[in-house]
Length: 194
Image (cartoon, rainbow, N blue to C red):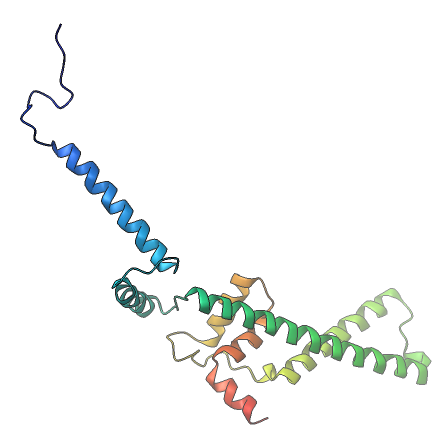
């Protein structure tokens, strides 16, 4: 009976290139997995934080975008939620005032009340425009410049607003409010002067 050796004819106890390749690939995969866990801050690899910081700085310099840690991401989400709340509350407050003014106007001058559906739709659109402009004015967004640099980075506040709108599916007023609170130096100075 003839038994064939899997490693080939060379039976001197040496490892084949395939064996070393498999061990090398497995080691590389394990190392990348550990570095991935370190990047997401699940484990701490000594020395990896310096390498990660250097890599982040290089990527941020090339792309002009921030790479956020988990803590920074949570803080950003909280700030976006606060901006949404502020805008929503201000909008409700202004809508209530506009509604009261409209009711008082219609009581004093009944002929100004909309009679047709078209007039009602037109009045509703006017009210929404008034509410939007008033909310923007109350929050200081009406002086939005869009071209100032956000947090001394390589991009503008307008670019930051676009990113927030896309990332968190919020409207432009909410994104502008969040940007003003997060790092728009020009707007922060204007708000402080109000």
